[in-house]
Image (cartoon, rainbow, N blue to C red):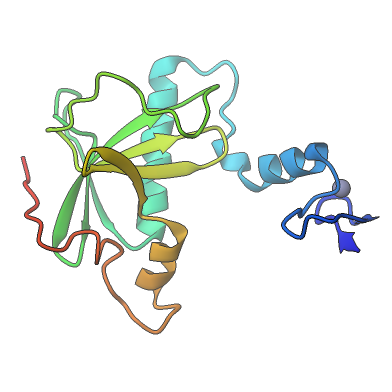
Length: 168
Ligand SMILES: [Zn+2]
């Protein structure tokens, strides 16, 4: 017997990873949890982009980075995130109505180190490495930097080994 965290009803399931009684409860639960990401429907594209950038700034500050914002819209990337003296060039994109495996086309991979994709309910950070996209700055990394596991290492430690970071 499981208890749905949304409606508090008990439900029976044979799937031990199932957390909610229904897809309705799952959707509403996460929609409320990530309310801050639900853009006002009438906001124009430019403002949406600006909101996304600010959300990424706040998220990375919470994760323990120092954040520097571009002083001109023609800068090659949107933000620079620094942790333990290491800079990462961050490009921010707003993603609406797509699967979370979708990476926007026509990206200039020379211009950033980390791609921040802002979805309607969360932010994911991607890095292109060895011909494929991988998630970085994950929740596990976040715990690491906050010292929850007894260390205070860089969230990119391990990922960044043997690699030079180029700053524009
Ligand atoms: Zn429920």
